[in-house]
Amino acid sequence: MHGIGYARMRRRATILGMNREEQAHLAIIGGGPAGLMAAEQAIEAGVAVDLYEAKGSVGRKFLLAGKGGLNLTHGEPFVRFVGRYGERRDAVAPWLQAFDADALRAWARGLGVETFVGSSGRVFPADLKAAPLLRGWVHRLRAAGVRFHMHHRWLGWGQDGGLRFATPSGERMAQADAVVLAMGGASWPQLGSDGGWVTPLQATGVDIAPLRAANCGFEVAWSDHLRERFAGAPLKPVVAHWLDRHGIAHHRQGECVLSEYGVEGSLIYAIGAELREQLAANGTATLHLDLVPGYSLAVLIRRLAGSRGKRSVGHWLRHRAGLDAAKCALVFELTDKATLADPSALAARLKSLPVTLRAPRPVAEAISTAGGVGLEALDHTLMLRQRPGVFCAGEMLDWEAPTGGYLLTACFASGVVAGRGAVSWLQRR
Image (cartoon, rainbow, N blue to C red; front, side, top):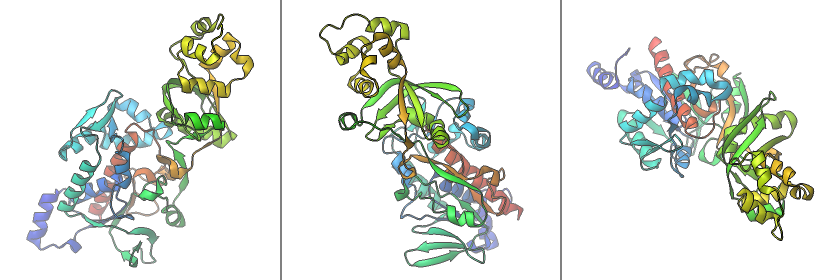
């Protein structure tokens, strides 16, 4: 089997009378992008593949990601791209070297889906939809020989090393020469990623970091007035200032949204890991928002100075500082009367409005999760050191990244690495 492509492997199996049972057999558990990509690597190498999915269809969270326009990847240079993975950048970099943003776009093109780079650098399918891409992909995998088994929820290993599954007709056992686990994190559990794999893996001694919310909103103690009148209102543009866990100051411009429970949106997701760690360490975190990034403090003081006459503070802020209704409401929510009456103090407040965060939203509401199988428990092929022949991929690994195409790209790439790793391991056997 060594080095033989899928078409040649199929012809050779026919000539030699080799049936599927005589091929090397890979079980993949999880039908998201990482699992499907691992299946593609293996079936192209002539390995027999059975893919097991807990839900009734594959790619459910992938389809949800495409509801607002599928952000597949990002068009920025590789060095900056890798930097989006924070403390795990060095571990994730080899995955991306195996399958980067350009490779992902070429792969989509091979399925008949062209992509384009948006003004923000994000990469989307031309039709902005996930369903056509997923349908074409699953059709190609089925045609190549991948066998799909729906409503199979993995329970762990049996005493004989077989795979245990809960199915509508009762528990079922399955055997495989190698396994790729790609079951996602614990966000959006109704779509299948519920973290149920943690217990059986921990039972075998695998090191797993606690699953935490990532790319999530944060709770703020808003008044009833703000919550009822301005939930859903965007704040743009703003510049966020914060201290990281080491006390180093950072800032980032972007957009966020006032929500019923607090704040959310792309700017918050981009810095959420640092905010979450602050909350874990200190019980609270403070985010300072510059509501008027277009004005320096000195210019803003001059614009707010002078008599307002009969005009209200809100009218003055809209006219002289360019604040919209949502930003004005936020200022009134977090500023005392004495500061509102002092132009210099008010200007300073607008340039650094403190928002106290109380907690991240629950994991089930998050776009993704941090934590999972420790990367130190895996070798460079993403095989568990404690369980040879068992590979892990996707969001169930302990890494995180902000939205913007980075999450999906690393899931695809880790599936490539795990799938190729499983093939190589099987060939060595």
